Image 1 (cartoon, helix red, strand yellow):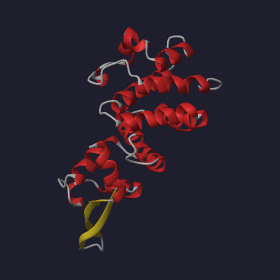
Image 2 (cartoon, helix red, strand yellow; image 1 turned 120 degrees about the vertical axis):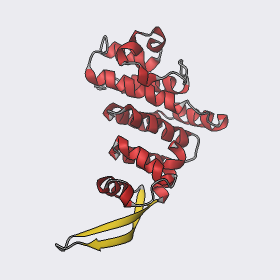
Image 3 (cartoon, helix red, strand yellow; image 1 turned 180 degrees about the vertical axis):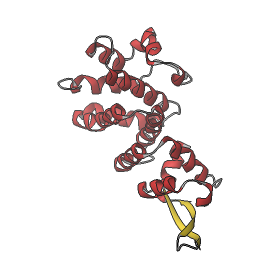
Length: 222
């Protein structure tokens, strides 16, 4: 999709991200992409006007999805303030270093283009805000963004419940969810009890705890 236009799309994304023209209180999830594109305000967003120009009317499924994901990312990123000095420091860094801008903002765009669920783009916006605000470094951003891409949407509520100690052991949720979150690195387990059945089958209940990686995510998104 972006062959030959990376020099245009990254700067357009940068301006759209750091100079949003719509209110962060707007519920984008309640509006379909057609409604967004019909709104003159959104057409003034550089990334929107650029993508619409590429696709003429942005009818391509991938282009429409990119716009939906990107707008949700921008809204989430701007919902809370960033230390002004740190924000200006980051903007100056990418303005002076084109390759850095393409590396970092380009990576974000690639992730957004692969997302299907807008919730993941919203989470990514929060994580990127933490990066610009210097709460995490670039490697941690990359790790968290990769981990978020592997989550199921239902996992987010489970992580929140474990983080808030509403769920403490495996009897309170599905084992396949636990196994997935363990494999991603967000939670750890310890054996609570083991029961041996009459047919030599066993059932193990596990205590659940948030790992250091899981705490890093939770402190950012919750």
